[in-house]
Length: 340
Image (cartoon, rainbow, N blue to C red; front, side, top):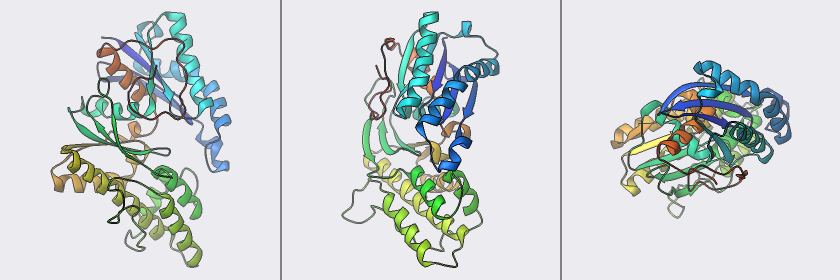
């Protein structure tokens, strides 16, 4: 079976993974997160420069982790979108260089399809039909997934404004907590009361979109609460905010399962690593008789293994490789796994 090398550089992580026949053989990750902390968010040019420095050593580290050499690799997969344009170009350039030098087939793939494919590395092939909740710093989407490589993916809803992960970052700043906000709010919230503050649940009114997401108003509600509460309890506020996000994400995901008559929910993306999102999703799925699939924590955030995983699926499905003219698509919506 073909060994696929996957390259991911859509944001601030340089990720490389190697997958063969649905099995993760090795991976490596380099992050420029510390370089962005003082700015309170990712700076595209800094991220791109970090990718340039990290890409070759990270590829070698992944090969070493798998006990392989580049001669063992049979195909290259690379994220071509969406993401930061300057960052994407680094990964695509590296993938093209390897493909041109070795003659290996190249597959340009969609970042979010990679997130969905990451779950297959832990739980095997996806069922014939499932609901995918992709929730990260840049994306919050509900998808009706049939076959990742053969059938167009149906968007059921997307966030109207801030993504959930973006809201975590902004609320962390309001609470005086460091960037990135997701992991730190999760830690701080563990010592707080999630019922202390009743923050709003966005787009859950009778006239609102059943499956729609919006987190800008929730962020504003936290800002107003912080302004009027001089004796603010940070842990309680963090826990209450986190509960609101987890409540909305999981309730709407279960609504999508009911609407589509699907009995499998797959949650992926960086916010899928949040402990409350995972636990509340499990509680509600158990009560509804829905199978919940969430990959291990290290496969939730951006990584090269997920790109190798979707590349592996494309190779096994006999998909035609992308051309060496493939380019980046910074804002493309997920409809198909392969971007040509």
